[in-house]
Length: 303
Length: 303
Image (cartoon, rainbow over all chains, first blue to last red):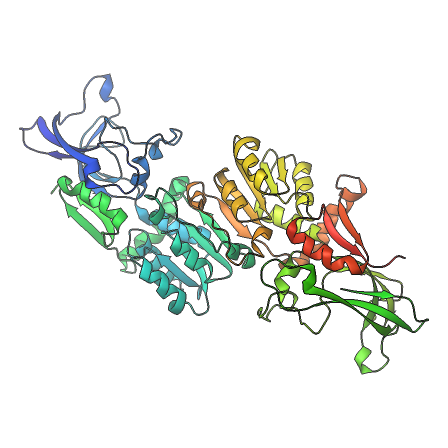
C-alpha cells in the first residue's frame, strides 16, 4: 500500500507506505502493520533503471483476503503474486491509479490503470464450477462481500432461487432449518469450516460446491473440522476449488457479460470505502473480522 | 441371499435364505443375520403370478459395501435398490445364477444371468472423474478390494504411477512420508475419514479425487472429521462423488474396454470365495472389518 501526496513542489513529494512489522500467525491485527512517510521524485528515472517503467499516483487500493496469506512466513516463491510479503518493502495489492509519468509505450501520463477486480472471480467461479441453470437453488455465504454480492446477482439474472448469508453462526442455524426445504443445488463457498459442514447435509443430488474461498479458516492455527463429507459420495456432489489467476485470458469474456449489465443497472455493487492510507491497516485487518459491508477499498487520494 | 439345494425330488426342493434380525447401527455383526430353510417348487407358477417370471438357481452371491446401507432403518423409498431391507424378506444383492425355469421371452432354461459387477464402477469412476493421463501419480485406497484392484490396473495400463494401500492406519503414515514426494494427481477414494484428510495435504495443484466410497465411515455413529479441506481451495482440487447406477446405459462401453483386456491377460482379478450360504453372513460383515482379500463372493452351489 502506498500513496503519493503533493507537498514538496513539482518534483519531490512525500510518499506514504504501509509495511508489515513481522509475519503473522492467527488473526492479523492493526499493530502488525505500520505506516511510513518518505519522499520520491515525481519522475521515472531517465537511466537504465527507469526503462519501461511507469509511475502511478494511487487513487484506490483494494483490501483482499488473499493478502492475509501473504502475511505468512516462508510461502513457496513459485507463484510470486502469492508469496510471502517482504518485510523490507511496502505490502502490495490491487488498486486503481493514474499515470504520472511513463517510459512504457503502452501508457502515457493521465491514463487510468487498475488491477484485477473480484467480479471476474465471482463470474468464472460461479459459472464454470456451479453450472447454474434457471430454477437452481443457490446458496451464497459471505454474500455481502466483494464476491458474494455479485454471485447473488448473477444467479438472480439467470433465474435461480438465491439465499445469501452474511455474519456467521446464527446463519448456519437458519440455513439448516428454513431456507432450503428441498435442498441446495449450488453452494458458492466463501467461508468454509462449520458453514460448509452445515451446507453438505443440505445439498441435493448432483449439487455443485464452487470453492472460491474459506475465509473463516485463514487465521486459525487448527482448522475447523468437517464431518459430513460423506455427502459428497451419497449425493454425487462435485466440489472444486477456483483461482482467478488461471483465467486472466478470459478477461474480455467477463467484460462482455458484465459491462452491459452494469450500464443497464442489472448489476449494482456495494463498496465499503475507507478514507486515507492511514486507515488502510484497520480496513485490511477488518476483513477478517467481517467488519466490511461490501467490497473493502481504501481511497488514498482525491482527484 | 438365497440358495436352492436339490433334495426333494424334481419338483420341491429345500431353499436357504438369509434374513436380517433387526436394523443395524454401528458395525454389523454375524448375529444381525440368520439363515432359514424353506422349500419351493422348481417351477414358475403357471397362473398370472408367474407371468414374465424367471426362476434362478444362484451360483455365486456378491458381498458389497452398499448392503450395509440397506441394513439401516427408514431409508427413503425413492431409490428401491438403496432402500432399507425388509425384515420379512431375504436380503438381496447381486450375483450369478442359472435359469431353472422361465416364462420370460428373454430367458430360457440353462441361461446364465448376472447382476452388475464392480468393474463398471471402477472403470467409470476412475476415467470420468479422475481424467487420468500418462504419468499421473495415482493413489488408490482399499486397493486390494473389489474396485481398488481394478483401478490400480486401469491406471497402470495407461502409464500412470500407482500406489495402493490396504489396511489402514499405518498406511496413512506411509502415504504422508514416502510414496508421493511430488504429490498426488488422482486419489481414488474408497475409504474416507482420516485417510482422506491425509491425502488432501498431499494432493497436487488441480488434483482429482474420485469418490467411489468411504467404507471407514459407514458404521460410525459419529463420522470422523476432516480438517484439511482448505486444500480444495488452495490447490484447485476437484472432488466428486460417483454412483454406478447412473451409468448403466454405458455398460457396453465398459465391456468393449475390459473384455479384450481380460482375454489378453492385461487385467487380472482376485476373488475371496467363501463356500456355502451358511458362511454368507460372516463373509458379508467381514467386509467392514477388512477381512476380505479381493472381491468377496459367496459360492452357494456347485454345478
